[in-house]
Image (cartoon, rainbow, N blue to C red; front, side):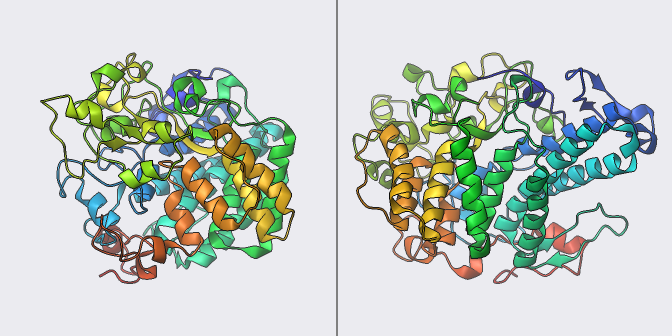
Length: 510
């Protein structure tokens, strides 16, 4: 269900202009007339800092400096999606990243700053709530701090996966604003333990009502916990993660949406399959090209980035910038009967061939990811720049992943193969393909490949399964470098290294 609530149109960008999440969700107030020290001292204003903590979720696609859609940044390092664009120097850091040759001076800096902004804002809420705990109802204190800690874990998860060894802090910094750089395994332990404490509080709801869609839930925390545990290959927590997945499954509150194609339309947002999404809206939006305007709540630029140049008017598709062409191999990996194929991979070759004015851009294949196409209908209400304000939510966790996580964890822990196979076959049944009669972990990884193509899961699955060196090895024809363990992490941006001479660059970068 698509609703226009605070978490779609009220996540304003700065601490100076915030939307309250008290009784009147759309009231806008500004603390600029007061000192911050005296502003965040009551429940209404403290609640505004929670809204601020959610805001960076929306920024990765475009933050005024870089395009860093988190699903794309993951996918271009895998084997389905190419960087594309006008040329190899168009968003050049994408091309370097995709070829495992990112440079500290030319790399993904936007996500780094976005996610640390999220950490800082989450810490702000925790600070204000603790300092003024007496003015908050206990239920509000517990709920808001649980939300902030879950968000903080989400932001750190992104930083931990992409950069590994990062500056870490649970309390905001003071001059000279440097934090200890911890090893990736220490980052993991700190974050997973804190997230476990939040889960054990049992204050996050299983689902929010329509006016609060976009806020984290207990199942969001379960999925985040499980993602981190599986990526870390932390066998000591497999059983706990499996229990969380089965709790979601047995709750009866979630299920597979009957139509895979509808799942990625506006009507499929926050359906029974959705566990967590990043909200975007084209209604009453003012997102623009300036650095400040870019992080005002609104729509997303991802569809415009990742759509065929010239568009396909016959299909209602707007002009795109030609980034993220999909490899033909991704289309060919699907069974012809698989209903996921034509949703995940949009074949527009016949339309291009029939258009004498079509000018292919770099790495054009004629295939595009249908899960985030620039359909005209998804931006028709925008009042801001239409290129930046498509009405496409970013799917983060779906019930299909819950089923596949549970299946994999069952096999890893010696559980029932039949039960695991039943979970996988639910996903396959929805896709219209044959049921499996035996199941291995490789089968589950392949099912994840088919199910989540374009959603930013593939690269991390290849790394955690130990298959990256083989699948992304020297036999590839679409990149000149092979993946290596030394390039598992991105380089810490030079700007950050220059600010803190104590930071140590990730291995294999100069």
